[in-house]
Image (tube, rainbow, N blue to C red):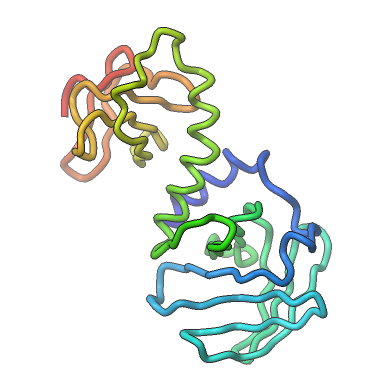
Length: 207
């Protein structure tokens, strides 16, 4: 999933706020996901630079500081961490541990109006919110969108594709496929060790 975020974040960064937007960051309840812990952990960046970390209701205290250059210094009882800006809006905050490729995703559930249970759901939320909105502008004007059941993002050996699903299956023959805001080029897209999709004229013709 961190590979997915590493690929996704640069593609939606133009929609991001900067970390110096303290009014957007401070005094909100940010639920953090790192893919390693099932506990519900909430970060509250108080405007007085105090950091409150609630883990299933048990609170510890630390501090935080915006250092400029889109960097946050977080100090907690278990250590100090320098985090770099990944993506930031009123609903999602993605931070990268300096020079590690390790991402943390935080969600403001009050603003997003939904409950997340995994970092995968956060990534899908961002994809549908930002990448899908770009792709729809590139759709042919005669595309029949009334039969689309759901938009699915799928990692492949050629990059992340968007699949306009017409059935409850993950993907099926006849589903429309997009890559980079346009119909995906013809060819085979490997989605797993033994699974691949064949695309022609922007549609799946074989699985």
